[in-house]
Image (cartoon, rainbow, N blue to C red; front, side, top):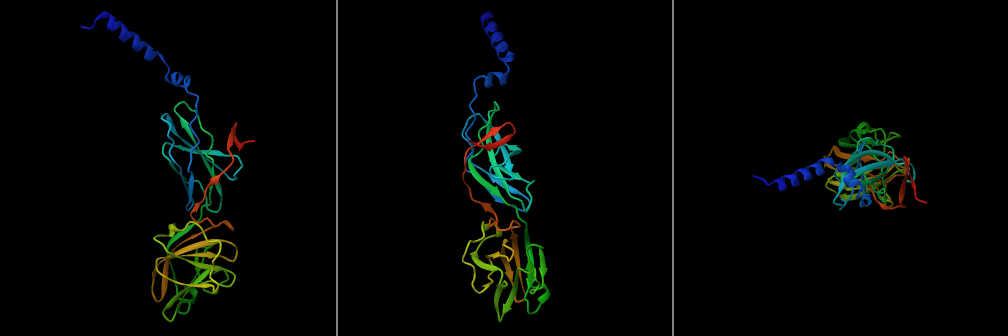
Length: 273
C-alpha cells in the first residue's frame, strides 16, 4: 500500500501537470526563431516547380512555410507548409516566372526570416516520344514547331528544326535565323538544365545521334532542347522541352545566389533597409 505522503506527492504532481497550458508553458520560455533555411534549389517542370532545401538543425523545429513572388523584391505570398524539405508548387504555370523563399518555424510558432538564396522557376512545357521523318521522303511530316507543339513541313515558316537522312548520315537542321548545338550523350531529357550561351553550330546543322541532347535557339529568341531516343532511316523519335519565356535559358533548374535579407512587414515581405 502506498504511503499517504507518496499519494499526496503524486496528486500534487498530477494537478500541476494537468493544470498547465502546454503552449503557455513553452511559449513563455522560447521566443527564439529558427535559422533561415539554406541551400534552396528549384527545378522547372511542366506546369510545376519542385523546391528543395537543406534541413534545419533546431531540436524544436516544427516545419517550413513556402512563399512565392512574381518579382525578386516584390510581395511574397504564403502558398503552403510542410514538415519535409521538399515541396511541389502545382500552381506554377508555364510561361511565368516565380521567385521562391522558405521559412522555418518551431512548435511555439516562432518563424525564421525568409531564406537568403535568390531562386526562381520558369516552368515550361515538355513532350515525349515525338516522331518526325526524313524531309526528302516525307516533307510534310519532317519538321517540328516548338511553340505550337506540332509536326510541320520542313519548309513551313514556323518550323524550328527538321530531320534529314543524307546518304545514310542523319542530320538535324535549322534555318539561317536559328541555332543548334549538340550537347552530347545524356541519360534523359532532364540532364541538361540550361541552354548554352554560345558555341552554336556555324553550319546550322548537327549529326543526329541516339542518346544525345541538342539545344536550340529559335528565331524569336526562345530556347529548347530535344533528346533523341531512336533513329531509323526514315524517322527520329525524341523527347523535348521548350522555354516559353523569351530569352530565358533555364530549361530545368535555376542557379541560386545570395540576396539581401528580407523582412516581414504585416502581410508584405520587403527588402530590408
